[in-house]
Image (cartoon, rainbow, N blue to C red; front, side, top):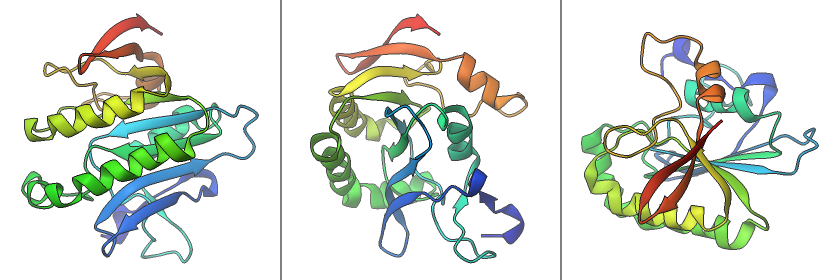
Length: 204
């Protein structure tokens, strides 16, 4: 990674991450705010992980982040005790070709990590933020399996508007639009998960 492009977590936040195989795969990123009075947890489902959580090449004992993770932190860190980020597939910063090559080998492992949290570590319900954006059709079945599992304990499911293919938009708006944080917070829609589809309910 070019040093000038390193992005860091705000306020000295240090995430807990689950990486495998020389940091090529990230299965989970967890952020805890011990000062938050609210015990709620936010689970976010994104498409694939970036390098957020890896060690900085410049500063010792500092983790790099990315714009998406920092935007979620800025929007929700003071509201939730924990923020947990899962992905449809765990290949870090991959091209679609790389993702297709490695995805099938690690889809089960990714699902196992999510299932372990939902069925084992999660003692109470959580709020679910879905922000995958559009992704290749070949990942649809696994997306549905993950959503079936995550929605089973979700107290609330929210996301931005749906793209034409029916998936919730990525949290970052298209290039050229400003005030990403304002757009994220004020443009969330509440959904239900029915018949493998996100169904809009109310707008916040």
